[in-house]
Image 1 (tube, rainbow, N blue to C red):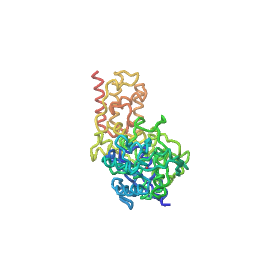
Image 2: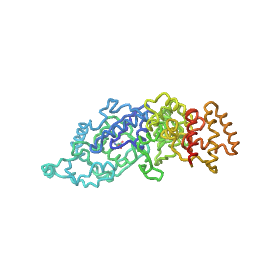
Image 3: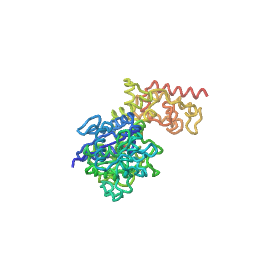
Image 4: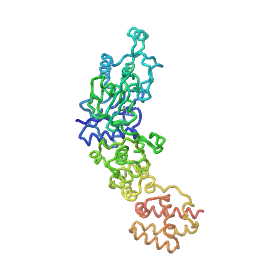
Length: 487
Ligand code: GLU
């Protein structure tokens, strides 16, 4: 079988974890089977679709490095790949259903018309099928009142519909539980999701429909439409829900959900791909780390779980750290650069000196960085003044202002000498100095750290001083001394 999988987003909002999971699973199924991955924009809901959401689809997947083989931007033999450009096709098949008696005109007035949206969301319309068996004469009176009809599908009143799902197995629905006679064509001449989706999946020769489990109630209806048009439905693969840790559907309340939010929070695309690929799929019960290239080979639908997946932000954070540590210095430099620029610490393009300092700082933060966004927080002091601090911040526990003052005065030349010595040599010198003051090394380093960085948490101190240079480092110690003296 020619595997052809599509991602069919409606551009009615930002790309979020659930949608991206569907897309990635589809992409990996296509890659691992030598099939094709297709992007189709389902913009039949004209009120809710917008250009910004379309752009977000492109931005999200280009950031993730996921490319489709066919789609609006790359073309293909089955286009157009945007539903609003395919209206004639939907009209043609709606007409076919009307001609065969599988669909009928309904002259629902505004209040009676249960919106296509509600039906699409699977809420069930409870529609009373009032026009289904109405005589043409009676319908004419509505027509004459100028009411634009919709086209509704005739769902069989009894019997049942069965489809095969790669994840759920055989699924059977009683037809009386199928959405009663949903709208196929709206009065504005646009199709609903149900008709457009079926027509396109058939014409685009889609082999597997991957989508979230919330679409299950639509599947029997779609199967009925396929059959009415004389077509074989594709294989369905309804993917498990993605939940927050409280067991409720993942949403804003749980944290970031839109992909570009994860990007601005400083996640690497590699970490997102790895994490999202594991939401409802596992290779075995041990392995956690999968590169995109691994998944392109190893992914298979047989290993998709039925049970809901839980989105664990902590685990994603851990994975992000794993991938940050795997980057080369140059790659991490490139990854943190936009964050440094956005924070105003580095110009665009970076000046020579800024680039040198930032590249030098990479080894200092690579081990500890959780998110790229933390880079300016950790490194800002190398590109501008240290964070503001008060005299009391300089005092180690149990040491007075006088004691701290004499420590800072004594270490000033040592700080100036740091860039010329190795870490070991520096440590030895500071240690003997601490002994002279009969205090712990930590008590000696703590006020220096504050003076240099403005923060108790910083990259390794000697490396930081080395990057800052003798002059600025000594000046900062001097400023701290003056602050204490002024008290
Ligand atoms: N346009 C639908 C959505 O955005 C696609 C559902 C499907 O894949 O059939 O969720």
